Image 1 (cartoon, rainbow, N blue to C red):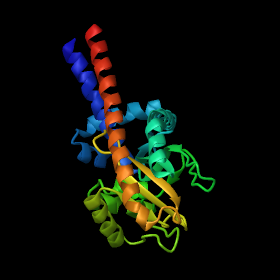
Image 2 (image 1 turned 90 degrees about the vertical axis):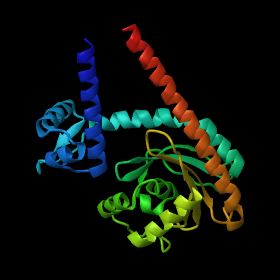
Image 3 (image 1 turned 90 degrees about the horizontal axis):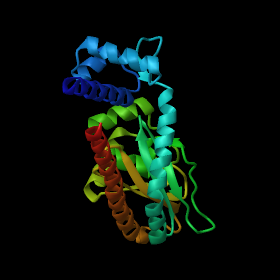
Length: 265
């Protein structure tokens, strides 16, 4: 019985590893998946067949694989739950800075906004929950890219491109890497009118959790001035740390409950 349970857990782990590899690549061949995962080709084929049949993976006419449509519903539900748990701390960030606070995650090569608490100012920033944006021109996107090796960043922007949203958008890989190095050094990212003219965003990654996420505040450049940057950045980094603790605590609680259930079973 123990052996069968261990085999089941191993197969589940391998399936999730393949899903992560497909998510990172966008489109990928079965041979590439075998190389990246280190699994035998027949094992990869077997797992892919099961996931295709369930709708979690799809095989395209090119015979390459991508994530399947059934993951959309799961992702949206997970995003809503994550956003709801983050709202009290996002509200705290609004109190500290006076500006709209956002929670975002990396989904494949794009950034998706999963929660927001608006500023109380009559003129404030609004981002639709579920909106997906390119990472190279947003504060949250650059905060997330800075947590990855430059070669992985290169692969991402080669797939997405680096179109200019405004005259301030960074449109070269070299320019982006220089900005990412600064973000890694100081711990927070800035979008200074790179996504939208007249809007500034300060973002920080949420570190130490099992999924890539970042928190930010955004507002008009007339309020988020250079003089205000230091205070705002400190507040964003502080709340990012509190979110990391909150999310990690949720994970630990779930893991403990699941382990207790396994013992009971």
